[in-house]
Length: 393
Image 1 (cartoon, one colour):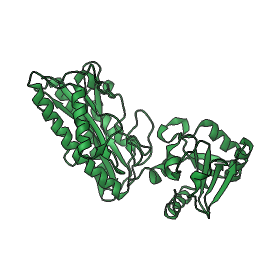
Image 2 (cartoon, helix red, strand yellow):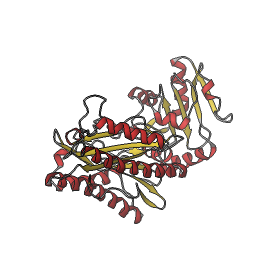
Image 3 (tube, helix red, strand yellow):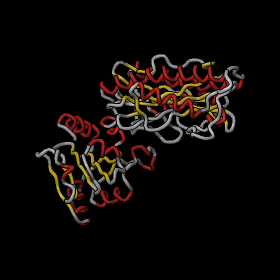
């Protein structure tokens, strides 16, 4: 639930942005941003609105049968009940008529991660006499930023994950020299076991894929039919996890070869590595100079390298995704000017992946992934020792 400190910070941002308030809406969890900010316990199966004004006290519009989840709503803040749709529409008008309100809306679906409110609800609010603007920058400031505790948790998880990745390559290499090489699923299972021993948790994955399978960015090995990790294979391992108690995700992709690397594969690797490093260099250059930088600009910096190396047609996805306290693929600014028009700035407190990839269908896929955090003390890249050269085992 919002507290007085967070309320004052939000209201100061609303005043600075020149809007009258932030209107939060949710129904059946379709807007995780509203749910994450309000944090209602228990069953919530009906629509609700929360209006945070630039000045004054917040107001909630809640269904009459679902008052239990609102038991922690501060007694000094306004709360109105509705049962009928007429009461709902009238209640929305009372909240927003004549006001400019920010909502989880993105014109033209430019940034889908903040385009959470249905078009019909936007129409409802506009018909109530309000002007709707995007809450995208508010989401970055108040939903996506990491706390000091979360940053520390991320850093710990990142170092454990990096060590597990290195050991996984060694194990796969050793087994490839025997009569019983591992298959992708077996190595995936070994990684998950190592996560468990280390007190880490992941809701799916990891991705373990040899060359042709790695050309599918979201490939996941299955219990039957997984490919053998044999000599001559290019091996991609994408592993992500968080500490089990209130941890924040770390997400990495490592690349290796079981034996000799062809000249073509080396060029692909160097292109993704150098694209990753171009993104990191731009981040560090801008932040150290006190200059703003957007996720789109960082994405362009990475893809410009890949394009210059002749691999433009083999890029299938953005350079990176937001990582926030709720989700591995979060609602903060992404490193993207390919899939979406990500114009949000990378402000202090946000974290994200940097993971350019090149995918030659049916042949080979390569990706190099680290995580970045914009701190008051500069740009943090995790893990501390990230991959510079292909791992040869």
